Length: 410
Image 1 (cartoon, rainbow, N blue to C red):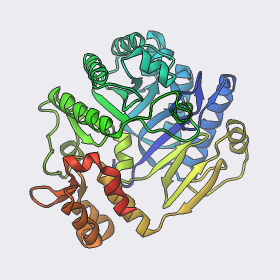
Image 2: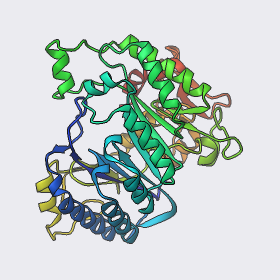
Image 3: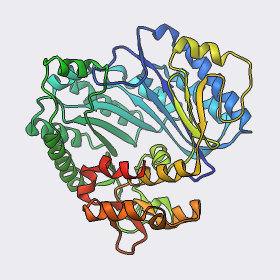
């Protein structure tokens, strides 16, 4: 995808039970509203696509919430609506997040038939006690079965989400989770350190002393262990929290020097949709609680299923990329765009911020734009230039202290 190609995110804010660590907008006990909500989503996508005169799109991402609570038919309706409203690339990546406890062979075959070609399974842990602590509704045995069923259904691009740095989690338990997850041989891993978000069940449990607080040093050790195990297993660490397979002969490594094409710069199974975010390229967000950034605007959609459906039903037309359900937006300044491009790009651990791309976009070299910030981070051993000096990226130490670097550019 390029600067003229959009990524499309659809938020599905329905859950059987909210996880104890999640602060994304989602609802419990409202599944009966799913059909009405899906119709509203289709209507919002159609309206924005028309307002933009059917712009080009390179990816669709169903996130949540729990998108796998949708029926295959509902997913197919939304994909078809987007195909009509946008010029969807023939090789578009279409991802769907799934809870292992909500899918079976039939539903996975239905999603694949609806043109979903990338499945992201929220496994989180192989330890049953940790899964209960997190409030997950699945077991690891169900995660294994979901992976097996997905392969039989024809999925050849599977991501596994895992969480580390949990209260009282041991290094041995994390290593077992990594080993058992690697046995499933997914094409992609997304690994996240637990963050205690205010207002979540887990945060309240830690605050009242029912659970010990996560230890930052232990989490850092777990991150380094994951790096060791995943790289040894053949995964490229292309983004701070993401690793992907890159089969020999199917894409250049590009690990030291960014190339002129994405195939060289990123592994074959890198998530194309998320690369759009990290490269600070435009994306649309549809659905209650979604966010978008396109047409020079950043915006957010109302966080209420009922009000979202009501607003989308409003016939009032709005200028692209906004829909009647958008409740806040602002025009990005050039300075905001430059700074976001820096700190988002630095999340790309191999590619980093490519100087030529930056100059072509902003008509200034990143070194000239941020001389003091870059010098300071390099003095602390957090940033480095690639061998040819054509890209700026985090050092291995900088990956552990990424937020410290990013704050320099915010």
